Image (cartoon, rainbow, N blue to C red; front, top):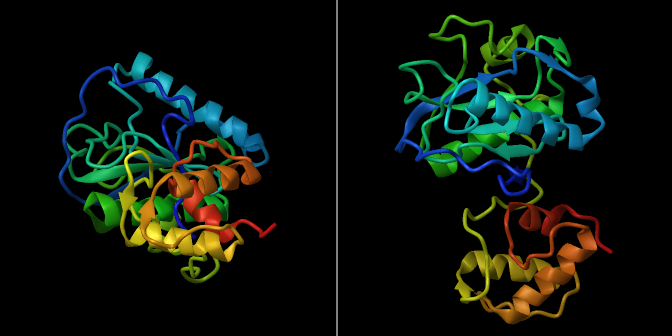
Length: 254
């Protein structure tokens, strides 16, 4: 399964209060938890996940005085991954002197309420790790926040999973049903060209759309994208991003 990214604009993130410090590469990723009460209700209501991520950003900016949320990415129980500071930006959550060594990925569990990370959250953390390796030059390490810093984070259940080697739930890595997202948005105008465009166009032809498979994302491709997005109930912006790309393969055929 390709990463299911919730972009900053989609969770209504506040703009950072300054410029991020560039981060060219890392040894890997450190895993975090909230350290507070997390309502078990977020498991059944993704809207609560959005509200929680926004509240964490607010606390980090207004309470800690940071320029933004401290994490690179955040995983919720619905296997959605919220964009925090993102690729190549120094996180703030790992601790003084430790942020340049690892990206920071938060699992939305706490020390009360929702404590045990659901399988889909673990998958989301690993989706974020793989995304950071593929696109952000992250190394192979997966560690807990407490590794090298005096803290209980990421909590006993999540840290035990990290100590076991952070395995995929279910005994292995599931075969993705969609090819990996190409790492760039397919947009028009201007015309976007490439093999990734051809791959998406071919898939949309398989789904029954009349579309030339020519590797050029122009007005015809954008029109098909808008119709498909409306069918799926997602933002009809005519841009093939991670969610629209994934749905092209994984959404049930009409």
